[in-house]
Amino acid sequence: MKKFLNETKELLFSQGLVAILAIIQVRVVATNLGPEIYGNIGVYLGFVGISFRLLSSRNSDLILMNFNETNKNFLKSAIKFEILLGTLSLFFVLSIFYLYYQFIPTYLWLYFLSRILLNVLEVFKGVYTHLGNMKMYSLIESSSNTLRFILVVSFVLNQPTIESFFYALGIHQLIVSLTVLIVLIKNNIFTGEQISFIEYVKLCKNNFYKIRTDQAVGLIPTHLDVVIIGYFANYYSAGIYRIAKKLVDPINSIIVAFSPWILNKINNEKKYNFKNLTTNILIPTSVVIVSSYYFFGKKLIEIVAGKGFENSYIPMLILLIGYISYYLTFWTRHFLLLNNLILKHTTGRIVNLFIFLITSPFLISNYGYNGIALAISLSILIQKSYEFFVYFRNKNIENNI
Image 1 (cartoon, rainbow, N blue to C red):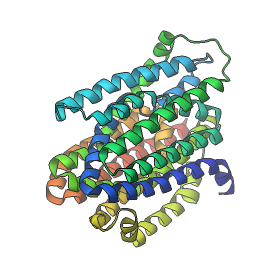
Image 2 (tube, helix red, strand yellow):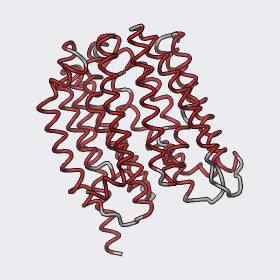
Image 3 (cartoon, rainbow, N blue to C red):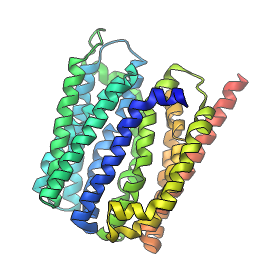
Image 4 (spheres, rainbow, N blue to C red):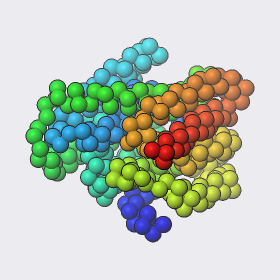
């Protein structure tokens, strides 16, 4: 435990800060804008999230895999590649908004355009995970989230409108993107032969398709859940559900904190002991997490979002079941990635998507925000059970060789 904490302290600090600031930010935005506008924001963010993450989510893993395949210097080509993907993603966003709303609010343009540059953050994450420089990784993460918190809170308190919220996000993305770009170029320590953009695209080709397929099938339950409940129910239900989801998101922050560390461990220790990680770290902390939400959840909702969101308690507990199951087995995804079994994870996500699409319309129609929370948790439980089965089957094959 002591060694683990020593190796992950910077990551835990940065993600802990992220979680705390996110909860305070939720309180400011939700209480000042109300459930309906808060739900509307969630729908917009869902559309943008699925458009950009379709081509760019987890491309830091692509960077990490490319380091294992070449000694050449591909940093500049990787940056160009991510900006190109961001530009293509913008066309997806514009198409969705015109099809769904027939117009694009003026206040969203800064947010859209600056989101293109934010793709460079994926290059940064991949490079610094490869280097094992968790201190710089954590510094950028914590600084970025602190800046977003300051901008969103100050803008919304000054003028509590949806426009203020998205102007703050746009400015945040622009500043973070330029900062990361400067850090990457200034601290470039790779001295190998430069790789051209075309060569880099060829290098990425196989792994890019694998990662994109894997991420694409997970985007609907992850980013369109708020959109879906807004469609089948209303913006109020979307707002209630979004608060529930935001309050269990700190569990994802812990997973994000552990992920670069575990990726580095698996990459350098081919037979890393996941049993010790699970029994000594993950199970004890999950007991504390579940107990905290169960006993203090109602008070947490009242403090964070106010009495108008008290109905978020039950969907929060339902989501907690799925999130904890993912937390306990989050490392299976990284094991599959670095053992050339990422398509197995993709299969698990397809199962997740299938369960979500089949169950969510019925559950939302009958149980509203509780229904979509149940659909999400059920999908996660089945996906992670499948990945766990693949992991053990692969380990048994290795042991028999």
